[in-house]
Image 1 (cartoon, rainbow, N blue to C red):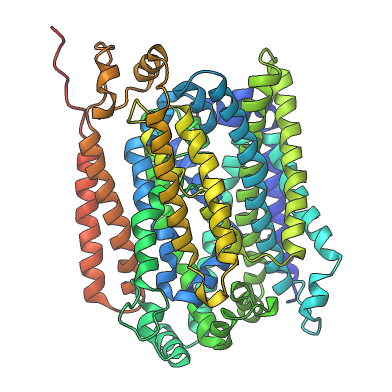
Image 2 (image 1 turned 90 degrees about the vertical axis):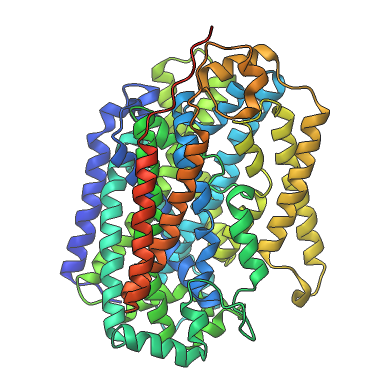
Length: 614
């Protein structure tokens, strides 16, 4: 795919703006440690919310969605749509608690909730584990996705074999250049530069994806022709376009057991950055950057609605256009040949369909998606290393100047480590979906303890340690067991994640009941600061009668149900509008409006007044 002057002008302008923003916020980021990682807790909610959604819109996301649709049809997206309930829990239940905790990272909460050497060890270990292992894997797969986009577009060589392409030394330089460009503004500008750049990047990415979707649908002859060609290619249009899987089909693209495992367990069982049970990760970092609890709730609600309702359909339409134009893509799902990776269908359509101008815009779209994710992961990963390792254990009395220097050095370390992992994932031809499933399975089982630690005083530090260790042990055991079986007899990844989660849940509950609770004084201090609601804190609440919890947990949970209803009705409603099913669209979108009205009305009520103590 050749670029013209207009394309290059768009690309150069974008990178100039990104670097300019980094330089603009350099001095502000140097003011304090809190400014560098949390914007001085003064970020407007709409910037924080847009930064959240921009971060989750990575270079891999459109490619991954295309691969899931090729495997399972539209319903394949339930792997991430199933997280909606947990996301709404974060909005209406946990956002105010996180902001109230005034932590900089989610692992800092560990020593706020627990006490002693075990809590200190867990905080340090988990900070390193997330910053080094999980963070590197995430940056690795989004870098691999960006490399795939470039190789399928401007660096596409039709006469080069897949093996030769995989062995090309250009991979190293691609990784190096992409990470260095992103690191340039991330390291110097801190959270303000990352967040402001995220806003611009998200707008550009949505414009580019929408433009490509329009071009792709028009190329195949419009929406009706799109449906006809996909159905003709696969002989089962109901499975391709069904919002829910077709369980009655002779050969279901997604079995009912897999679907139920996703919907009923994914939101609480798996820890995954951006969709953590109980909140966590860079979502907490953005909430910590907000001015107050109300802004933290607004930011997180904005993120959830944009994340699920606004973004998916442009990607979905391009995926269907690829299936309509290339019937062989469905067969690629069964092939181990990297040349037939269905995830490459998305950038393949950019190469085949994008006119002059849109080519440059699409490269900017993916660069924006890539840079927004990597810059956040760098800043977020460095916050663990500095706040929860360096400041906590090495230099507790460090000055602001020392902390800022350490923050920039930690950002650079995260960048270099992630570059090494990225290169390995590229030359090793690791699929994006494989990496995603690995992280979901690796974090299976810890989600329940992250939720319940806010609402049950009896949970202690050994509950979390047992959950984390048990999850790793069970994951390795189940993975080894599955690997010993013939491929046809292996369980789906969704089943193995549920097995790991269930076993881990039983293990940490047993550990909780067999070990001592946290010291009473520490629990009282936590209760006074966080004011958690619900019956799980009654023994502690009786010792702190002056503390007034919100007493709105029931109403908040109803808002969670309504918010999830809004998402799960809006998604098929928009699809029904696109595909011309206007009766279905009216029913879905009308129901979504009613649910949204009820949600906002309930959410806007003041907490019920508490009776005065006698």
